[in-house]
Length: 188
Image (cartoon, rainbow, N blue to C red):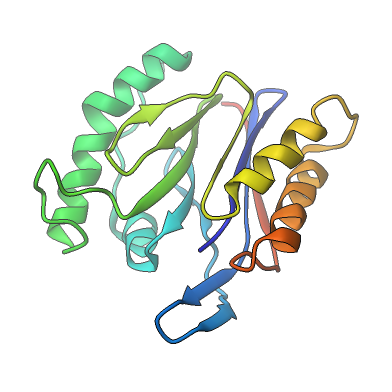
């Protein structure tokens, strides 16, 4: 249970996340220390879903490097589909997170920043890019998207915009809570 927010601003990628960890079976709700947004090589990633999946993506996964000539959404999506997703699927299978079957879904959603692209990795391993320069994932995503839309014509800095979106999600979703983490991936 979480909220991940991504924003493209002046060529840089910003990702923010809450710190909520929920155990719905035992009705427990805590804030966790380990961030849901992290750097891994050229990538900035924010994971909504299983903690184990996030840990494998952060500490085990060795993502393929995007070649310097690959730029723009269409070329980056092609690279992600051909290189990144198969490497991630292999890693998740090796670590016991997924079975490797084509029908075995990814246990969550991931917002990924690389180059100047903000991508979403869906449970079916689909890679997509929104028309808007923002994205959100997790149980608080609808609140975040509404808050991002409401701030689109403001002159606020990107960290404040993301903080406001996460704050809106924490106010209206019982599965989102501070503290919030915001990271920046500069344009390379």
